[in-house]
Length: 411
Ligand SMILES: Cc1ncc(COP(=O)(O)O)c(C=O)c1O
Image (tube, rainbow, N blue to C red; front, side, top):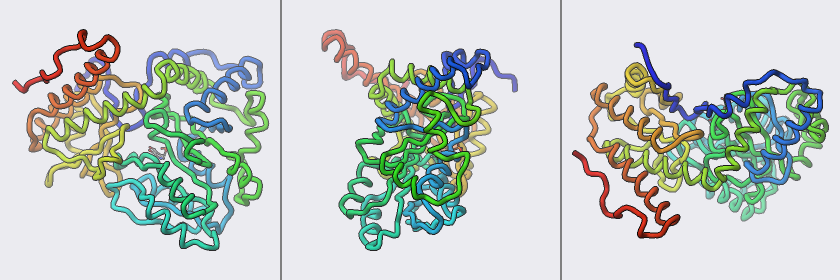
């Protein structure tokens, strides 16, 4: 089918890359050992700290997020070390597999994929570990396969209550620059990030934000490492350089992404994601469908996974939506294949893009003959308009706002 206008890329990452970032990358490649690069390197290495909310170093890798997963492991641990991990979904499973292949003894707390990590589970296991065999607690902040977000501050509190010295290692690949996250304040030792989601960049960069305690662990960690070695990277980073050829043009994009995030303000970025997630859930409820995440306090602000009614295939719905409306939605991963579809509402996004996205879903439900109620879109628009009204009231005072009690009506 021939399509016109822009494709809607509403998978939970990679996300839409703003034209401003595309333009910033559209330039000749420069000498990565020259003075212009040094300035760029220093700027992005410093600027990234505010996104992770850390004063410590952030390592940049020219790799997808999986590289930063591996880097967190090989830089802090030794073969045979115990680690505590939690089954939150497809991505926790993959990270567990990496840990096992590196010879770690993984204590993997099972889960039903409909919730985040329970701090009480972490506290119980750590309290039992009197010999301190567990060297790291590894948590996926936002489980992209299910749309459940773990309350990382509570995991830190649980570790403190258990008086356990393990490192806290957190994957923020689908939450960084979308969902409130505080590396220093929450006492995280390694934060794993990626470029292709909240940072609005193409895939290809990944990150490790690193605490003092993690740097100390790095000195005695015995995992073999070369490409991922923090020490090899930190030395040249001091003057803005890298030990190997960096992804120069992605770094120009990163510089622009950081400028955009700073202009909007991180708090506003988080608030925007919260609103879009709330409006999406209102639509799902309006359609009479079910949000896959079962714990309202853990609803993800970067994506929503929607459960299909019995006997209806999520991938058929996605195919119909792609063919007729040129919109990509996230597929159900591994055991959720066919059962859920995922709506990405993170990154470079606004109210009308969300309204278009949800309209595409509603029309797709109709074409695919999936039983649903009309009214999802209206419910979402009411959430969006109401919060815009509240903003107007805050900015100009009550007299300037629209009447409060007149939501959109179904026709
Ligand atoms: C939470 C999470 N962790 C890790 C990854 C793996 O990252 P990548 O596919 O960039 O290697 C992803 C990818 O979507 C993810 O969402």
